Image 1 (cartoon, helix red, strand yellow):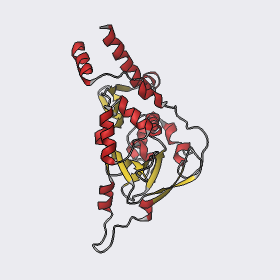
Image 2 (cartoon, helix red, strand yellow):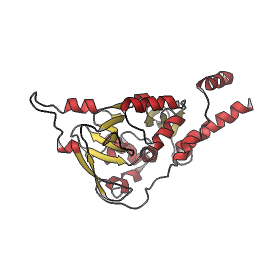
Image 3 (cartoon, helix red, strand yellow):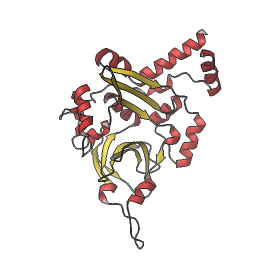
Image 4 (cartoon, helix red, strand yellow):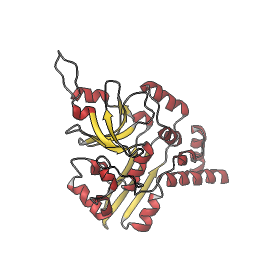
Length: 281
């Protein structure tokens, strides 16, 4: 029994570290946030990760691979109590199961229509985008071609897609961009998977937070939620808003998530975990 309890405690600690203690922050600092839930998931088997990489002929970046070997996705959500009888689901931080991360290249090629007598041509707005590389501090370019691979991490209704972008299959450092579906503009979000994860946490999982970095901006109802719960995230001089046009060498204004946290979850077989859950019942 004590062994089972220790495993459960370590499991809770893993998710607390992964979310940078967000649930505790809600309890201590932000009133009226209720029903905070973190869904616990089994880790991917190494063979599953290898099979996914083989299917798409790419390698996952190291931090993303460690994440999926610790938990097959992440689902954290919370509700806001507007009144005693009015509680609504508001916040949601979601990373899909590994198998749900799929290529969107075919969809984009379909959208980019071409005549029967000409090859598909990619407009410059799709093919190239300028952004600041936060590692080097220099202006960089996103150049897409027929060998590029674009994976969908999430969809923001019909407005945008959050994409993991490999400019070439050989790339070892894919970056995360927001693709605006109305204009097909690319907006830079994060250099790494870990950075995107901690940005999600810094924005409290508020609806459509990625649109803070878009040219269209937040819908008015979402902006009201930001003003209510996290007005500092809408400040005009917020460094991350300027990341794609201004070189900023300062440290990001949010907590640092150490990728080593992905290795702290106790490894156990699926059968052992099922047995543990049965014993608890």
